[in-house]
Length: 217
Image (cartoon, rainbow, N blue to C red; front, side, top):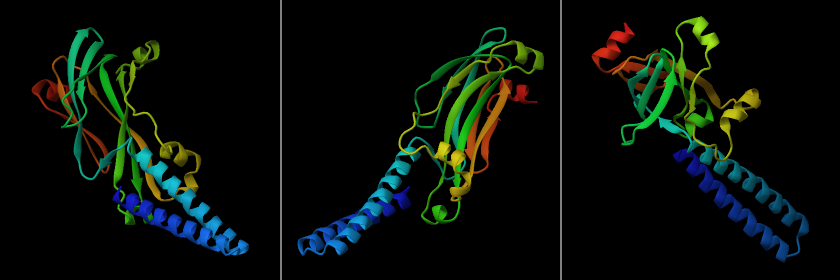
């Protein structure tokens, strides 16, 4: 993120310089020269706006610099095949978020943005965004005959949607090394407590208490 701020500052300085040269040449009635400076200003301004839109979109994701806890998951049984999950989404999140799921297992999905080339050189970290919590049936026939329960966890898109841009312009966005969605799922048992972490290679789920550990065997 610091790299994007540096680039924004450099582009802003170039815009000011080009704008000043445009006005200076225009006052001296050098129309061709002033037109060249004007075009350069437009180019730098376009690049500046692109960087700002990218920066805004990355703020809908979380930085991923090392393995970190992204969710604590507590399971409570309501009735057969129906559970309430209580989630807190980070170590600093003091609020509990409640979701009701149908099925035998819960699944958490995330998007992960990784970088290569110049994007790494300017210091961009990997970023992630939790996008969906859903219920699963272990039995295929039950999964076919029951409507899945899903909850949207994603943050509203701001700025330039890098996820959609990469899918549309895959070959032209080579600075994005890996852009993928990943999901983890675990059994739902009354009283189970799981912890979900994320590292450079994706989501990791660990059982916290004995109930969760017995479900994971």
